[in-house]
Picture (cartoon, each protein chain N blue to C red):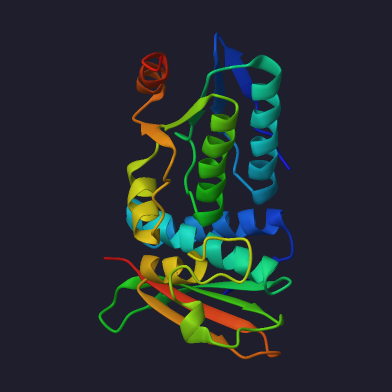
Length: 131
Length: 117
């Protein structure tokens, strides 16, 4: 498992590049690579902007039926999200964005888990499987 | 931060994005396009994203805003060269780039700008 810090805009770019390489090496199609990298970009920016920085973990995983996948975890120790259901709705935004970051990135991946509590930080885990 | 160059040819500003876009570069590009439009009076902006591997909601919003800003300078913006995988991903993300024209390539983009009276 690889750990990448997210403390600047450059770090967000590095996370994208790393996810791109891992997705390509593990048999994701070009469209699926693009979807996963786009989701990674959204989530890494959230970690930076809303979480005050944090870390991305990138891991290769195997499904029960033997398919390879790429699993990403983004975690921060920021203020957290009070209502995670609300946060996953299209158009919900805490600030200047379009409110598509969380809800949109959920549509781009195969598995999506959001854990957050006010004052206890936020963790998002996503998986994209090869087909 | 890498800066995206802007080239003026005739009445059109050409922007070809060849760098890995980070948020500050996109914000900077927005300012640079506005400055160039104000300084040159160009009537069109073509943004070539052939080399851009992903457009997320932030980059998408900035592209739309460049379109809105250029309209205030009586100029139209056309985004050209979007990769198929990027188009599919943008649509699934829920982003439609409303208010900004798109074309297959720079040639078609110029046709759109030249057809505008």
